[in-house]
Structures are given as structure tokens and as C-alpha cells.
Image (tube, rainbow, N blue to C red; front, side, top):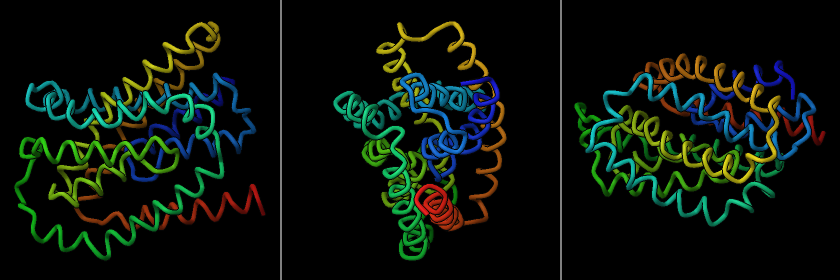
Length: 260
């Protein structure tokens, strides 16, 4: 992988990590377009590069994320993903990451669910929400349920953001509050995923690999800040339906390219 590849993937990661369109899917598809072989390092890169975007959350939300009450809620939400991630790590790394067919199916199904969710459930849920609901009002029960939904994102293409947002809203969390909670929950989730991957593969990384990773991390950090600000402004006036249609269009385009 070259520095140009790392820069492009860093931009893709930063722009897509917190949108309900699956950053992992976009990284895999972008790698396919650039004809990057799904080597062990490239698979690790697609996991570790997400830390750049995570740093942007800490940078923007440091006042919220280091509150003890929030730390406890994030820990509760993190438990399901931690258990599933540890149990299925080998299967995920060997069979799911880099699997274009799995990614396209997950993108398509997730896109349809977003559209159906907005048309059938979201208006009723929003009508019953308190307009003043903030992060501090999310309960431990809601946190755990959001964590269960997040665990679905071990499948590339599902979208951690979409899963947590839909799960949170179904359990009564206001749209803006669950989006911000999803941002914060990404921190322990991706730190753990990155640490586990580095622990298992650090001996295989060369000095050149670390330099390439550094480029990707810096680029994803900068672009993620812009993406977060855009997403927060967008969801206060719009629904998630556009992201659902985008996912379906993306599947059609890439299915045509790879299998047409």
C-alpha cells in the first residue's frame, strides 16, 4: 500500500465513519477499486485507520466523554460488542473483512431498513420524544440496548452508526442525542478493536507499514471532524432516508462494476 492509497482511504474513512453508510464497506470497496490485495496488513489497516476518526470524537466531545456518568454508560453499551468481537475475531478477520459480496448484501439490507424505519417508525418515535433530551438523559438500559444493536456491525457493511441510531430511537432516545451517543460509543469500541488487532499482528508490521498507517490516521482525523459537524447539522433538519437510498445506489453501482 502506498502513501497515496493511505491518503485516499483516510479520506474515505473520515467522511464515512460516523454516517450511517458503513465506513468499513467503503474502505473495502475503495480498496477493490484501487486493486489493493486484501493482505493481512491491508485488513489491519481497515481496522486501525478508524482510530483517526475516533480521535476526532475525543477532540470535539472531550467535555462529555470524560464525565464519570457517561463513562459508565459507554462501558455498559460496549459490553455486547466486546464479547462478540472477542469470540468471533478470527472469523470476522478471515471471512468477513474484505468480502465484497457480504459488504454489498449488508449495504443493501441496511439501506432498505433505514428507509422503512423512517417511513414506518421514526415519525411516531420523534413525536413522543422530549425536545430537550440530551446525552445525560440516556439510561443504562437504553445504553445496553444500543450496545446490542452496535454488535451487529461486526458484519462489514452493516454500519455501526446506523445500527446504534436505529436501536436507540426504537428505545426512546431522541435523534440528536443518539447520534452523539453513537459518536462517543465509537471511542471504546474502536480503541478495543484496534488494540486487539495490533496485539495479534504487531510482529508482522514493518517500519513502512507504520508510516503508511500514520498517514491514514492523520487524514481520517481531519476529514472526520468535518463529517461530524456536517452530520449533526444535517440530522436536525432531515431524516436518514437519503442515506438509505445512497446505500442502495452504491450497491447497484458496485455490483455492476464487479459482477456485471
